[in-house]
Image 1 (cartoon, helix red, strand yellow):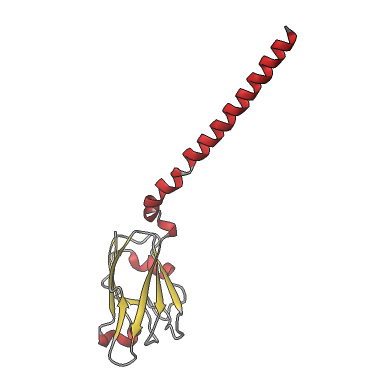
Image 2 (cartoon, helix red, strand yellow; image 1 turned 45 degrees about the horizontal axis):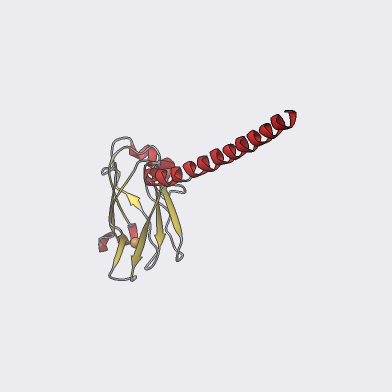
Length: 159
Ligand SMILES: [Cu+2]
């Protein structure tokens, strides 16, 4: 009788353990799709987003931001990369940006050469990040000082 009881308990224990393992496994399985499901929502997470803009040119007749127009979520960092035909910079027209944006860009643009203007990027692959953290919605028009005459302009829309 005792032996039977013990056997039953052991068996029960084994089932319980097995059950727990199954529960763990199903939890793990349930957890796995969660990050995948969260991935499409990631662009909405503002802090992590970085969008690259290439600065290109042949040094004489052609110069451009690529892309020249883009739309970003608030909080996005736009990374300007000197690809060719430099030096380039990114400067924003003070009268083109939304109300309150100048103060945001003053914080979001390190080492400004003058108000709302980045330093010149001289070296190939040199990068400059503009943080739009806290930036008001609207369109931000900018240009490259050395190449504005060649039409090197950009329009960034925050929305
Ligand atoms: Cu340029």
